[in-house]
Image (cartoon, rainbow, N blue to C red):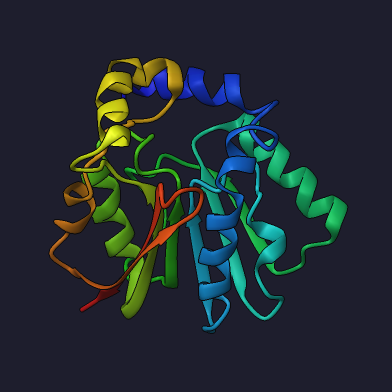
Length: 204
């Protein structure tokens, strides 16, 4: 997607995201955070959006969130204030293609339902790998294109509408797996209907 299309899409979705796409992806998001909660240390959530995941991180973690959309971040900050989420240490407006953090900064880096939205996802994955500590983990929750069946056909039909929908319906998992510093450890499907996938990768 073009960057202007992303900006316009985020602004359009921000007021209703929690009740629409956020509701659709809630179970997968909760399962991803539950997995992250088994570990310790610092977490960077790339594409934190309206902050739907933030209340579910356990208090012992130190969570940083970044997003390209100021409208989305405003919603996230409202959640942090309203719920007293002290484990959320920072929320910043940032382009995921150029993360303003040093190398090897975070124990866990996660991106939930964002890689099929951003321009240049390979570049985003490179930045995610860069700021993850050696031995740290990258946790991805996303929709990936199917090879066959009715849903695969539907994905191909809706692909030209990406700038309207705000995401790539035919996003290939290979675009995430090609980052050489990361090796795949876990791959699981998430509801609804197995449409979402949890990927866990380890930085060498």
